[in-house]
Length: 252
Image 1 (cartoon, helix red, strand yellow):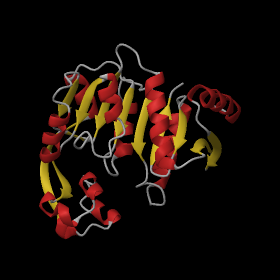
Image 2: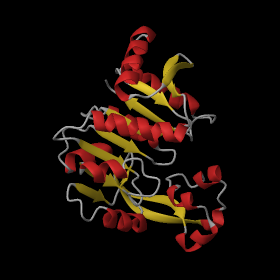
Image 3: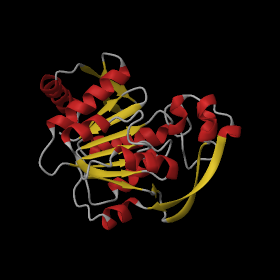
Image 4: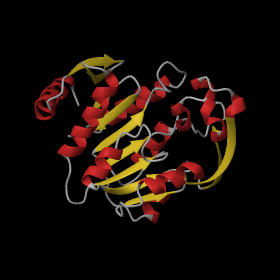
């Protein structure tokens, strides 16, 4: 998609959603960036995209759902519009809270699994919540397949524990849940997001909206993976909103 077409689409979206974004280049990519505080604008943009694309059979998949509420970008939309979808969370303690969060929402199905390249038992590394009073609130969100991921958040390894969880591939998830179409995918897997996106591209679905965390790739040795992934989104017709921590890919 060339920059002229993208510019026209951005102007149309600005008018439709009443949001202000401008275009920048990231390498050879043309991206949209906010003209107001990033966190506020990211949430606002995601909310408006969801609401503008609602329909009777709207379906979402959230990978790395945690408790379904804390720092969650879609909880309010899911509960307000009674959206149908599945929330995937591998950590047993967080999954119990997730199940409680959506216990009165019959269209939301929590699944106690990790999404990985192979199915079977796998190790994850999370904070020991027995020490939660000594840690920032957000630290419960750094559970990762990477044993050294906590270092990026300056959390001492003393506070980390290993947990064996059951993993399935994304294609297996789609098959087991008999999912044929998805409108929204939300990914927060602490450095594993691009792997999940690769699995999505290899599947039969093409979500209208993809929301994922990119902050662990910018400025790292993996930044080229992010650039390649963003370029692939644009190649497939998606508009890209690049915030400081999160990306929204939208298929007009």
